[in-house]
Length: 214
Figure: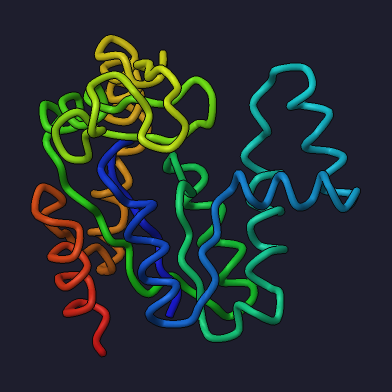
């Protein structure tokens, strides 16, 4: 079962990807993890990626696809995998489909976790992180016992730059421009499935299990 997770930043697709991987005993694969593993292990692809990253440049699509295909070809992916955070653009999706077709493979499901922008802004701007131990909380959904103080270590809590409403709005703008077209792409391919990401995390997962089967 080869699955791609789609959804705006903050929609909860990463959480669901991990739950799918655990339930169906397949690897949860994120591009960040692939980059880190290849760089740490000093692979040829990792060294190529590092030259771009060290210069603050985006890793070219062709190289990202090579890294992803190399990963999904490993033995632990024989029964399938969940791709989280890739592809992000139509060219990446086309390149991935082409590479998988050459291996006699294809994506079975693209699951879109649908959450309106205003919900995401509220979710992310409510997050708080401890400056000392890094523990994360949410003012509405997972508050601390004492406002502004970490339950773990007593450190102060901050709103990270990434979670500020203006930053979230910019990230959503990039998502709508670059990544949202993938919904149409995978709909055309007949593999898109949508779930309501505004409901409880466990209920979202139950809907995904209905799609994938027991």
